Length: 88
Image (cartoon, rainbow, N blue to C red; front, side):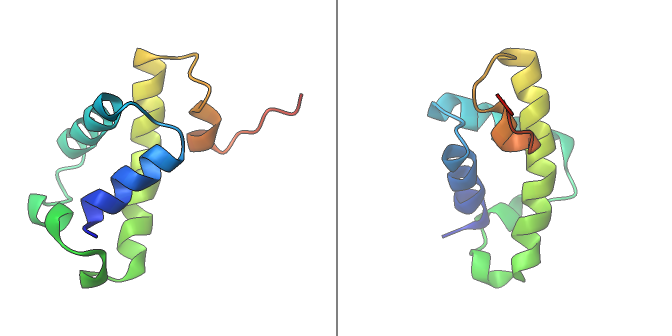
């Protein structure tokens, strides 16, 4: 599994779908985080320490929330990316 596949899987597991939304968020993240080079996305997750995926995921969560707020602010899965839990 590549780093990109792992991040895409995490996005889907946290409720981001359909695939076109995952694609849009991935594109936005890559545009706003050029420090993650294109070659990194194609590398297997075993090519880097596990912390690499954790760091990318932390930034990705912020990007997802920005995307949700701009495109579907009522998304039921927003709390999955913010860490907020509805207490009702």
